[in-house]
Image (tube, rainbow, N blue to C red; front, side, top):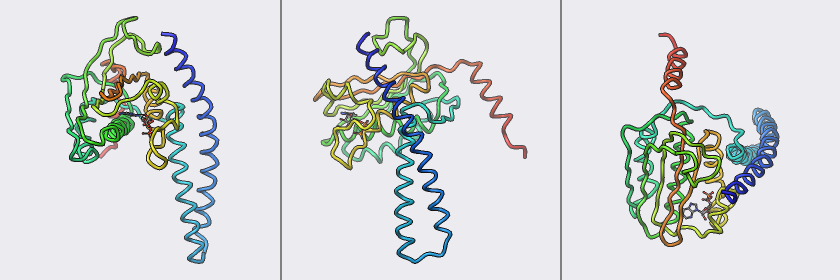
Amino acid sequence: NKEAAVKSQRLEAIGQLTGGIAHDFNNLLTIISGNLELLEEQPLREQDRDLLDRAARAADSGARLTKRLLTFARRRHLAPAVINLNDQVRTMAELLRRTLGDMIDLRIQLASPLWLVRADAGEVEAAVLNLAINARDAMPEGGTLAVRTDNVVLEEGETGLEDSLKAGDYVRISVSDNGIGMSNDVLSRVFEPFFTTKPVGRGTGLGLSTIYGFIKQSNGNITINSEPGVGTTVNMYLPRCDEEAAQHDETLSLATEPHA
Ligand code: ADP
């Protein structure tokens, strides 16, 4: 699939560029925050302290922004562990319900048994929450949001997905809505950092690009099916973690368990 290959090269190049800038920028922010903290320890007039607080808050939100860019550029340090994605979804059910509000039905469909994956649990939850927020925004009049998990075996050449997706065993977690959907123009740009169709202040355009980076860094893949007026499904594929790796991980966590 040539178009997909060009697209993924393009995203790779954007990643290199933003990653470099974000990394340097993050270092500068660390210096700024560090010096602000030193200043805060000085005796200060009340109004100066107020200015300092504002500067510190701005530096903090800058740091959050660069962190997301670093995830997109796959330079972020992840904390992968062997997890069952069903547990992640179950833990989030209440938060998802609250996020979606009364107008949106939440349906959860979990395959059992589900293969294990090796991934950063916090990033998985952030990704699902982000997708749910996008889905909510796409269904202003209400609708249904479905979160599903299942085991998927991809055969060589069978995928029709992005070319970088290798054959093998994957766990898929998908988030579907029956909202406004996306045009092909929008769909072709959604993984670019800062691409958003939302009004200023509503969207950062970093949701899907952050998820893209996280999934790629986890050796997985992400695909989106969307049709205007019908809805959108985002599929995330994470490679199955084999038994041996799972055991190894368990040994590691036992070994690092603090002694009573
Ligand atoms: P943001 O949500 O801040 O705009 P994202 O990267 O998460 O940033 O999304 C980029 C764009 O992709 C959105 O502005 C929207 O146009 C489109 N989009 C994402 N998810 C959906 C969805 N579920 N339905 C319709 N459009 C979507």
